[in-house]
Length: 100
Image (cartoon, rainbow, N blue to C red; front, side):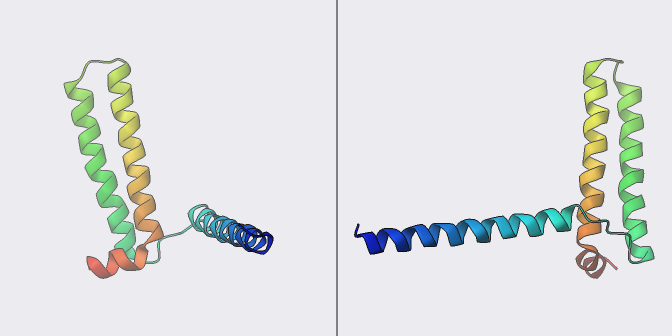
């Protein structure tokens, strides 16, 4: 590779790194910004997910003995709700449009 090609290659790598960092920063900003519900339909969607999780949580509590596994099952259920609510909050227009 010639010196000029090496310089161009280095510049291209830096540009790609800056673009990747910019995309990551955009993702961080979007993800870590509060997204309050924009409509009653979104609030209902949040509650639908939470109610379904509560039913499953009660079933887990009733069907499993206390212990590490039960605790992990409930913890992962809580995580599931968190991610589902986040998905709704970050994509409110799409969710409401898809399911009136």
